[in-house]
Amino acid sequence: MRELKRLILNIQFMTRIPIPIIIDVKEGDFSKGTIYFPPIGILIGLILSAFYYLARNIFPREIVMTFIVALSYTLIGALHIDGFADTFDGLFSNKTKERMLEIMRDSRLGTNGVLATIFLVLLKILFLSKIDANIIIPTLIVMPMLGRFGILIAAFTSKSARGGEGLGGFIIGKVKLREFIIGLIFVLIAGYFLMQYLLFLKILIISMVVSYLTTKYICLRIGGMTGDTLGAVNEFTELIVLISIFLLK
Image (cartoon, rainbow, N blue to C red; front, side):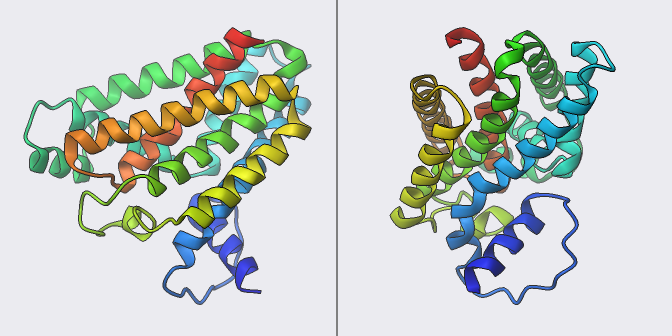
């Protein structure tokens, strides 16, 4: 029962899918519930795939993919891309570590964040439009799954840059080896059923390396991770997954 509550809690936290249930949150529920990040990614991917299946014969492919990218952000309330934009505003402000963290917390969006977001969205649409049609549905599921697994990796391999403050503080540095292994096992099993397995393993390895290196780079710049930078890892990992599938398929 506790695990079911953690699953519902993380769906409520990570998405805008309406589940009108009040959960009694206990210490550790968020960090232990990170094992459900990849399954939540699959849930998002299934919704995107259903939309693609219904719209593929109605609109040109580029328009369908534009709708899908927009839907992917609607489903999560633009949670991760907001962090992506704030991260670029902070990291590329050429300021001190303390000032970078202040900029990330600022609700206003700067030039770096705007440009990074525009290019991210455009690249996602373009790569989705060019990936072979026979693998697009598996791609729409694998992309958000590995993006959320990237968040798990980042939280497992880093510490909080804000001393545990903020939403990211619930999981950053608190994810244990148990959660990482369970998440990895789930991803490995799911990948077996989603696409040609050797291709999936290559994409998984690339995405894991990129998630880890991105996390280490951010930690080097600001001394740790924040909720915003976790979102940035998710978005960057999703883009890398699309690029990998396009190049390897």
